[in-house]
Image 1 (cartoon, each protein chain N blue to C red):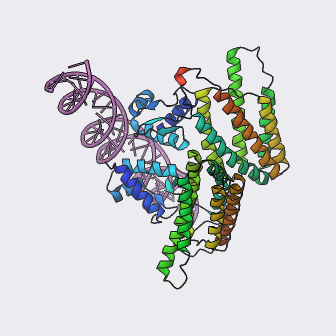
Image 2 (image 1 turned 90 degrees about the horizontal axis):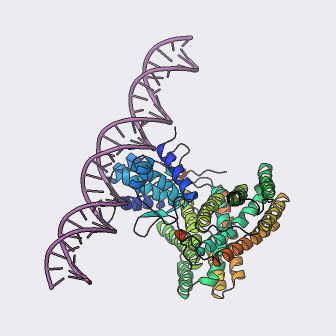
Image 3 (image 1 turned 30 degrees about the vertical axis):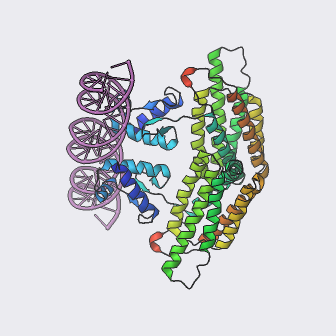
Length: 234
Length: 234
DNA sequence: CGTATACCTATTGTATACAAAAATTCTCTG
DNA sequence: CAGAGAATTTTTGTATACAATAGGTATACG
C-alpha cells in the first residue's frame, strides 16, 4: 500500500528534520533518486509535498534546496505567530474540547517531569533532554492551534512551526529559562480553562514576545559554533 | 522561453480564478493534458504549483479538485486575517516605504473613481464594476501585507486571499456598502501614514470585523441562486 | 595574459510507455 | 430482481528516454 513517493517523502522529511540534509543543501533529483533507488518521478512528487510544507524551497534559478531560515526570518515568523496564536487562544476559549484541555494540561505535566534534569548528567543525556523539551514545546503550540477549532489557523501555524524546526537545526540554540516558558504555558492553559479569551490572548502575546526576545538574544550573541551549520546574519 | 508547465499553470489558474473550473470540480490529469495539448508531466507540475497556492486540494482519496470554500471556511479565514493583518499594519507603520504608502493612497484614489457608477448602467457594466471593486480591495490588502516588510506574512496572507477569491466565485456575493469599506481603508492608510501602530492595528481590526460581519450576513441570507454552484452551509 | 566563444556536461523539462490500483459495468447466480 | 464477483475501463503511479537549457571548462584569438 505504500506508494513509493510517500516512502521517499517520509525518508526525505525525516532527513531534513533530523538535520542530515543541512539547510541550504541543494537537491539534485537524480542524486536523490539514486540514493533511494527509485526513479525521478516519485522524487519529484515527494519534493512537491515538502515544498508545500515549506521544508524545501526553490532556489533563484529554479533549483531546489532545503529551506534556509535566517535570524531575520525567525523574527518575522515570530511576528506571524504573534498574530495567529492570539487568534488561536481566543478560538480555543470558545471551542476547545475537554479532551483538548486535558491534552494541554498533559503537556504541562510532561514539562514538569522534564525539569529535574541537571548538569551532572552527561552531554548526550543533556542533548536528548533538550530535544525532549523542544518537542514538548512544539506539541503544546500545535495543540493550542488545533484547539481553536479553526483548521486553516492550525494549518498556517503548522507551516510556521516547520520552518522553526529548521531554525533549530541550523542554530542549535538551547531554549534558556525553561522554567519561565512553562510558567507562561501554564498561564495560557489556565486562561483557556476559564474560557477567558482576553486573558488567554494576553498570555499568548506575552509568551511569544518573551520567547522571541529570548531566541533573538541567544542568536545575536552566537558566533557560529559549528561551521558546518553556517547561519546567515542580517 | 515559456516552459510548458508555466503556460499551463497560468492557463489553469486563470480558469480557476475566472470560475471556468467550478469549485469542487474534479481534475483528471489526462483530460487536462489533452485540453492543453501537452503531456501529463507539465500538468502535474502546474497542479503542484496550484496546490501550493491553495487553489487545488486533494480529495479524500488522492484525487484532485478545485478547492471548495464553505461559509465556515470563510469565517475561519477571516479570523486568520484578523490576526495576520493587524501584525501587517503594525509592521507597515515601521517599514512601509514612501513608495508603498503612495501605492496604498493610489488604491484609495482608484476606489473613489469607481464609486460613481450607479444603477442606470446595464447589468454587464455593473458586473464589471463589481469585479473592479473587488480587485481594488484585493490590491489594497496585498499592498498592506507587502508593506509590512515581512515576506512570510505576505505569503501567508496571499494564501488566504487566494481562497477568498474562490469563495467569491462560488457565491457571487456583492460587497455591499462599498463606501463604508473605503472609509475604513482610508482610516488604515492614515494611521500608517502617521506611523501610529496602535491606531493602524485597531483600524484593521475594525475593518475586518465589519467586513466579516458583512460577508457572513450576506451569505447567511443567501439561498443558492445558481444550483450549479452549490455551496455547503454549516 | 585576458577575454570571448565554442563545446561539453550536469540538470531540469517533457513525452511516453507501462504497471498498479481504483472505479465502474456487466454478468452470473441465488 | 438483488447481490456478489469478475472483467473492463479509467485514473493515477512509476520508469525511462530524450530534449532543452544552463553552467562550466577548455581552447583559440586578440
